[in-house]
Image (cartoon, rainbow, N blue to C red):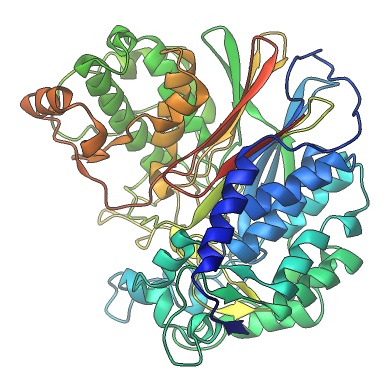
Length: 575
């Protein structure tokens, strides 16, 4: 399946990345942009140059933003398998330029019908060690990304579904060179890297793991994509592939309960996006079980926090930002879950009076970990004990008609469970459920597991419009639970500190949650870092996933894009 290439393959990867950063010079003149913008009218930002190239090729052929997203996801599942793929789930926001409406598509995984609230407890009644749970058959939920993309493409696609997979199929058959980030994660020693399927895929003939510049071919994935292109999503949710997915999850250790019937029964969802005014704009995100409501709550608190206006060179601003995050996470961890199973007080969390009370707690110095508030309509809930590891990606697209996609997509941990079917990794998304369904006094956790339930997600794609509904920006990030802070930081940089998109993405990541402050301490100015420490806010190097922010924004009639330098993402535009 694989063979080692000479070191010159790395140079080829770098050349491709640099080429993808530059504007594409396709022939042909697409229709005029509805906003009559100058400069680029089509743009893609995603986590890998191959994926960006596939998306741009679709746009150039007259495809829509959703068409491009299908091609991008198909390619990411091959070249960035540690983060997302056909075996995972996703949330997508779609902005329709003609109607100025933002729609949320929910492709979150669901627990199988045989799931139980105590599925991640051991015989002693204590939570299973995460390293054991994450590679277990119990960890995999029914994947939703492919079904969700098919639904969105039926609604908003302009090209035939079967024409969107060619670049990814060819790349899987012909091979691609392993990038530095993929190499680093393959050789990271994560629990998934000890699984048989992982080792069979990434081990060379001499018994060593592949490294940067090695060539990967994946004929099984090419065959899966070919079936998906020809048959639509039923290729994954019925028949041979569905049966293979269910069978693989039912194998030890810690066999799961998924059946082929669970896959056949899966249905993605479509909703109006969850939108609220902020400053002179409207910010939209995905509704629960996404945690996007928490980003909206934090924005509303920041709007009432004068210290935040000091800018990125102000210790007061960073202190207020971290304290706002802590309040946001306290409420998020207590109340967000699947609204089909539990009452999620969305309106209460965003209630102006409640937001004012929470914002009044924001200080410019640290203190004890904040407790959850009591928003209107909130039921009694137990504390959450969910671990959210890294393994997610984000992409943004704007097409020639001004439509936009902001999509966060994941297999949860690095390489999901490390188990493969059809050339792709299966998710470990069910470990996003709370491992303890109740607290000692019996109060239920909102995010406890249940049959058919979707685990809470930190994925929170964002689209920003002006008050008239015209497109302003699309953005989002991977990063486990830190996604909320990464997105919040970027919005703050763009619209309060008036930074250019790349400057906003490049800002240091600082996460305040519970009693801990973490992030990129080395990127903060030493004077600010020292001042924060003197106030009881000691920012320690983060142990979680770095951000992978991607942004497209319209400013002064022009599209501008940014890709996170912490990963291998690039931006491409036409013309």
